[in-house]
Length: 354
Image (cartoon, rainbow, N blue to C red; front, side, top):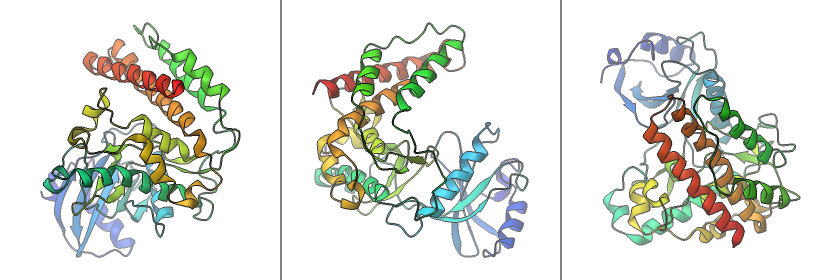
């Protein structure tokens, strides 16, 4: 693909060339330009210039209200993670000034040489159950590397509002659910167990916790794996990142972990269908291998975090169901996501019962 084949409203390569030159990056023509899949709300374009490979990330053509702020936060997090043991793309340069490129903030990062196992599974990984098992455990180990990072030491002391983080979760998401009633046609949530799960979360909230970097949407679809083995090449899509309780990321991984007994296996794509992933409880053991990730954190309460993740994600997905009632999303999508919400609340109740 040639640069001129990319919509100039999305990426103006003349502007990009001038900006890159000003950053002291290698000059020359743009080569091997291609758009990449990944993420539903942002644009990824890979290219080569001056002997170096880049991925440019920016918002969609029609920017949403918070897109630029989210991109600024992502760039800051990726810069902070450089030099840590967290597998993530490395920031090369960021342009927080939205006046440079058609109103859009953008940044350049290193390409990730890897694949999304919920989309495709190379022969090496598809043919070996032991590789699949290690892929699952490595999902937890990569997360523990993030949990081990001292967010203040890497310059993220003012990145979020950790005070009262756990205390405000249930109320915050019940308010979100209530807000859907403003959508025309939405009859209100029909979610069995909603009140019981909310009450249990309030009554069993961990008394103490230690703040850290929270990815905010940690599941298999946001991981890239190495082509050469079961290692996690990169954690991607840092849109929801903040400073909070990192154990919620582990709870999120448990809440979304493929279970042959329900729809979650199909949602995990080829890796979920392959059948070699470890049971969810082994993820907690793998996470705990890195002692600095769990120091001061109560893994005995991990069920609470898994229940909270089911609760939060279920409410988020119900938002699309509500928009479908209002004609703002396809009805079949709303029905599918509502069924997943019901499954998440069933899983939450199973956790509570266990």
